[in-house]
Length: 542
Image (cartoon, rainbow, N blue to C red; front, top):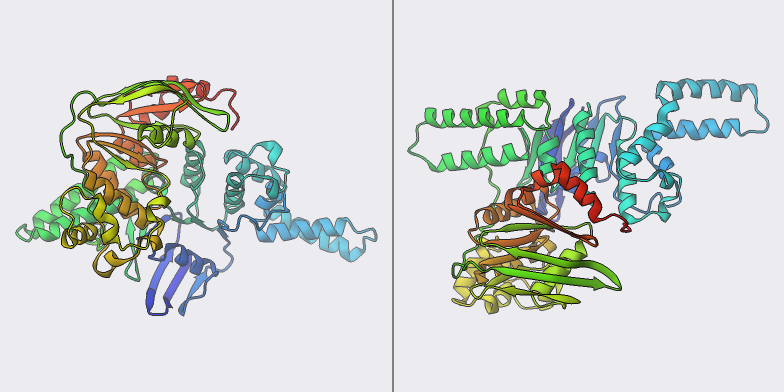
């Protein structure tokens, strides 16, 4: 068990945590959520001892071992991948080092022999004889080729380093496992492997992630950081979100009787737990929901931006025609002979192992880049609204957000209207007067979404729209695009986002493209499609 008692942390006048008390125990997986800046990563650092709180304490049950996903990607540059993983179990690694040093002595004494036998006993007790094969198995599961197991980390790519450090945290069956954004830089297959690993893991996990599909799959509990307090709830992220929204809706229904509200909540729990049993989650996790106390379901005070896309006019039947489009960068082909017709109401998710391919396609469609050959044509009724992946050129100005947004408003653009619009996107009060060049990544994306909403396009093109956003903004954007009546072209690494928005998938590669009228989950699980996807990248260097 890991426990935080009366933990408080304050930087200047800003209170991050105020007398927090919480216990993490059993084989539960706790997903820690909170708005950007709420202190999620900081709280994990308090739990690991990296940051000391102003008051209070953190205690780990005696005899228990904690493992942490390291964030310093250069710490083990001189160490091989295999050894880096085994170093995750500090005590075992120290025994290995001491044992090897004793056996390497040219003048091996009786005392050395006694010490060696003690170490061998401890080594065996920790299952040390299987340490190397266990470490290798973790590396392979996370997509590190066997040849790379014996290379120092300085010779591996940044993406590979992330995976090695993740394997290090998972190694040796720790009693408490702490993971900060573990799915970053992982592909779909590897995320699936990690989900399966954590579902089978029988100790305590505490994780911060913006990946809602991952949180939904692995979490038994959600810990919500809100205004300096931590509130723990049973269930995964979707259960927390939907139940808190239902409770919020009920709070505003003052005319509804308490008994009716109670029945509604109970029916919600039963419905949700029934759905949970059909997922990868274990039956025991379903039982947790069935036993939940209705009083535990509370309205969230979390604020969500009001993202609403309206069309200035309804599109005709001709949306977009792409014919024999080809593009390359620096002598490398990104796509060739790309043909597709966009139909009214299509919400197309574009996939590729090379994200540059999709960004380039979107830039070509928006007139920001030239194709090597081929053509495309929009319908006469089409009005586009575009969210680029790289938005830095839009924010190279000291203008206030009000002044920044005004030129993008084709209708009303007085200060009161623009301020109100910004307020809906959580830029309230003095925040609307901030200079555009000092915004965080998430704030910039919210501004770009505001720009898109003002355009009132009937064809939306979005390049990785969830990047930099917190869970609240992702959820609001997700809901808005799902309900949008127009046409959407987008790409995203967010599994839930893609699954709930897209009704069609186009995957592009050097060897051609695949175009299927399927949801994302249907697409990635279809055996025929899996075979086609392998051919799409055959012979292509990773």
